[in-house]
Length: 137
Length: 185
Image 1 (cartoon, rainbow over the protein chains, first blue to last red):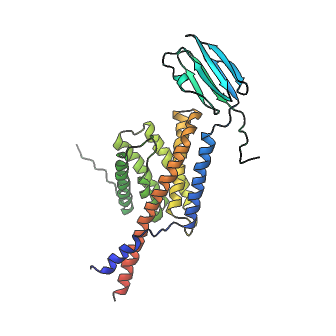
Image 2: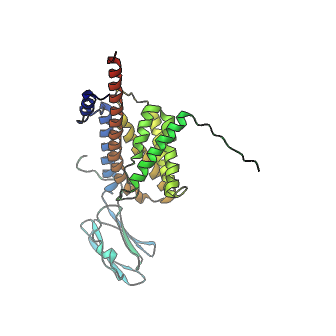
Image 3: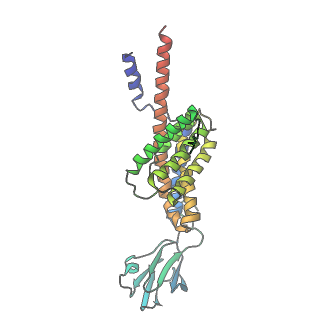
């Protein structure tokens, strides 16, 4: 049987009558914290302190980023030039036809890598233990 | 030739589980029409059904619905025993495992949203484990974890709220009809 009361009940819960329980908010908060921490931890490779330069799959040299310098690396096509400057590294010149590694630009964080496949040269930044940031002292 | 008949007796619970699994399957098909920015990032709408079944009929029924959905869904999309199937299965199994514990949380404080978020995180954990151990054993996939975690949080919350609203509605209706019935005489 139709009654107005039925409609009223339906309308009654239509406004966002939230039934999230206290623990739900807690879980939501914990989940958000988890996502943020994962992002911070996994997307910031940490401070890089060393550049590992490989040629033909073998480590050519490992150089600290603290000293600005240019390194010439021989490969099958010619010489790649790697520039280290202000704790950053990049491949500034390479004989590869498409220049992908040169266009990649500066590498700053640990874990970043530039690879010139045709010339078999790569630069990878590595960092030791994560350094302290401004939140720690 | 004698025609042999195999008779299967299905209880009403079986029928109910089948109905719920079919509903979940429908949502899976619907969801596949939604384009995803990254394979693996999807809302998991079918889990709304799992959550409701869990709350209403217990863990065993929820496990049946969830696993039936994974198997039948893979048959439907043609990836049964393909990598995608095992990813779904791993996600579903770990979610169910976590739900088995999560449902014992005090109901006064924790509701469907908690179950949903925990299950969503368990789901990506299961998937990432299979991806790492079997498909892409490279630490580079760690870069994807924040994306999956954020998706799990968002979709877990949304699915939980939808499941919660559905169950609110049910109880409101029940209470309504009951008060009417009581008021009648």
